[in-house]
Every structure is written in C-alpha cells, then in structure tokens.
Image 1 (cartoon, rainbow, N blue to C red):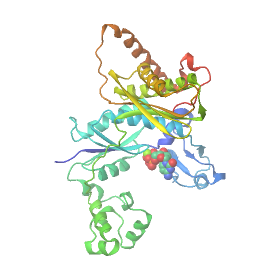
Image 2: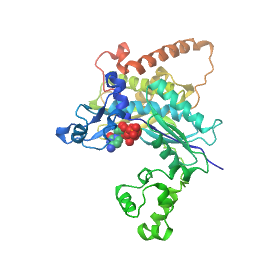
Image 3: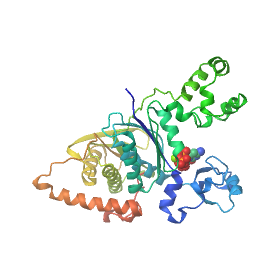
Image 4: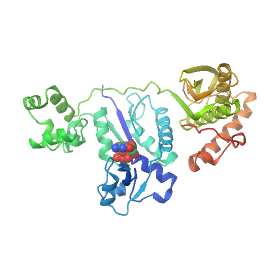
Amino acid sequence: MDRTILHFDLDAFFCSVEAILNPQLRGQAFVVAGSPEERGVVSSASYPARKYGIRSAMPTAQALRLCPGLIVVRPRHRPYGEHSDRVMDLVRGSVPAMEQVSIDEAFLDVTDHPRPGREVAAGLQAEILRRFSLPTSWGVAPNKLVAKVATNVGKPNGLIVVPPGQEATFLAPLPVSMLWGVGPKTQAQLAEFGVRTIGDLAGMPEDRLRSLWGERGIDLAASARGEDGSSVVEGHEARSVSSETTFARDISEWEALSRTLRSLAEDVGRRLRESEVAGTTVRIKVRWPDFTTITRQTRLRQPSDQDGEIFQAAQELFDRVWRPGKAVRLLGVGMAGLGPPLRQLGLFDRRWEEDSRLLKAVDAIRTKYGWDAVQRASDLQKRPDRPR
Ligand code: DCP
Ligand code: MG
C-alpha cells in the first residue's frame, strides 16, 4: 500500500524567530551570524538576503561584501529552542507518527490519517503561522526522500504534493545537488560525466555507477528514481513534554528550588496546552553536584495540562528525594502518557475551569510578548534560571 509521508522545515528559522522578537527586521536583508571580526559564519539568512547570494555556512565577512547594507544579528539560542519545541509539540500532537530530524524539520507518517496528506499539511502550515507567526514549507510524497526534496523545492511558504508514481518525473529536472547524499565532491565527479540533473543520474548505466562508487552508486541511482523504503521512526521522547534547567551555581535553598519547579511546570503546562494534549504521568529529574541523576514519576488521577497540578505533583516527588541543605545542579519536570485533554468536570472542578481560562489568557500574552510579560507574584523575588 502507498504510504503518505509529510516533511516540513521552518523557513529561515533563526531569522524568523529574530523577526518575531524584533519586528523591525521583517522584510529586511539580514542574517543571524557570528561577527566578521571573529571569523564568524552565517547561521541563517533571511529570504531578502538570499537574493544577494547569501547562504548558511558562508563567512559573515563574505556576506557583507555581497550585500554592504546587510544587518547582522548575533545568535542567541534559547528562543530558537523554545520556538522549535512549540512547533514540534503542536505537530506531534496532531499526527500518528513524527520523526524530528533537526531543530526545524521533521517527517510525519500520515498514512492512517483520515484526511488526505495535502489537507493535513495545509492545516498544520496555517496553524503554525497563525499561532506562532512562523512560516514553514511542506512536502507530501510516498516516501521520506521525495517529501524532503519537495519541501526544499517549494521554499519558502511552499506546499508541494508528489503523487504515487510521479516520484521519478518530479525529481528528473532538478539539479543533482538537491538529492540526499550528493555532496560537492560527488557533484563534481558527476559533472565530469555530463550528469547535472537527477534525471541524468537516474539514466546512468549500472556498470558505470558500480565502477565509480561500488554499491553506493547503485543506491544513488535508486534515490535518483525516487525510491526510498525507510520508515518514520519516532524519537524515544516523542510522547512526552519536558523542560529542565541547569543552575549557574548549585542551589540548596528549598524556596529557590520550589520556584524553579513551578516555572518548569508552567513551561510544560503551556506546551501541553499549545499542542492540545494532556498527560497522566508527571516526572521529575534531579541531578546532584556529583552528576548522579535520578528520576521519579507519579500518575495523576486524571489527564492534566494544568500548571498547578503538574507543579504540585512535581513538588511532592521532589520533597521525597530532597533533604534540607542538599545542593542541586539540575532540575527537570516532564509529562508523559499524553492524549487528548479530556476531563470529566465534577462539581468541585469549577476552580479548574476558572484556572483553565486564566491560563489560556496568560499563554496568549506570553506567545505575543514573551515569557516575562506575565509573572507570578511569588516569582518576582530573586528568580532562578529560567527553563531552557
Ligand atoms: N543552521 C546553522 N548553521 C548552518 C545551517 C543551519 O546554524 N550551516 C541553523 C540556523 C537555521 C537552522 O539551523 O535557521 C535551520 O537550518 P535550515 O537548513 O533549515 O536553514 P533555515 O531554516 O535558516 O532556512 P531554510 O528556509 O532554507 O530552511
Ligand atoms: Mg529551515
């Protein structure tokens, strides 16, 4: 049976996040890059900057030569991780299987999804843009290889569907460099034989392929025909949401540790609500100064996506392993056993309903203005490190 595989990749990811944090960057030619004085390179180039030939991994000095007015933004990694988590959590909660392959791309297997691949992709693309203001490109195809190429062909803001049977035809006119596993060296070798497009490669005689690259040559030609049997493998962390922080210095005051647990629980709760899932298992992770690490977990009576409930369970777990004065190097809070956020509202759940409404409002403000726009009064004292 034909499979339906989706691939997506965020467009100019680091740049897109920077443009959310600083709207003046929108539509500008800019890069997220290391400084030219320190021989820095470009991490991400905005699409207007790409018009000048600027690309990832290019030295910043060279990028400045190509575009003298180029704005150079220094990378800061925490927000990229946070935005990536939000997008990945949302997508993971919406499809049967997801394999995240980098900070900004993933494969999904939606063969068993009731809706056609194109609709699933279009729906998620629109939702990621609406909720997080992040543009993505999508490929829909019968396998991972062709789906990934389709994503790249459509960038930015693309959605390209390659129906079963059309794999080779779709790939044929594209340059060989767009094929997985064809680096600059192979590309140069192929050019010597007049092989420029993927179609040229697919048409190379087997004996020549074998004499040049052995069995790898045969695999390369199979790729060029759009053949790929590999499956979407879910990461082991796929069905959980967690957040952790390593302290700048070890912490041994209960109040500070408890505040950290609360802020970690809030981060987990927010991400659960964003991806519209709830969990039944709360986990904590504690690393002591000697690097030994323990995890503890507990099951809730009902699935929850509520900061307060996650925090309470995490605090109880923590209090069972902590003794006064004991120093802690790292704290983590996680939620597993994820499913739809169903909940039987009982007579005594009025408060929960009110909390729910409050949390939704807080989430909306934080998505728009950043985490620190809203704080709990008890957190306004000295704050420990924010979660990752
Ligand atoms: N990255 C990096 N150094 C590289 C390549 C990438 O630091 N040589 C980082 C910055 C990118 C992010 O990883 O924003 C994702 O990589 P992509 O290759 O997906 O590049 P972009 O998302 O920036 O652009 P595109 O629209 O082509 O996906
Ligand atoms: Mg990208």
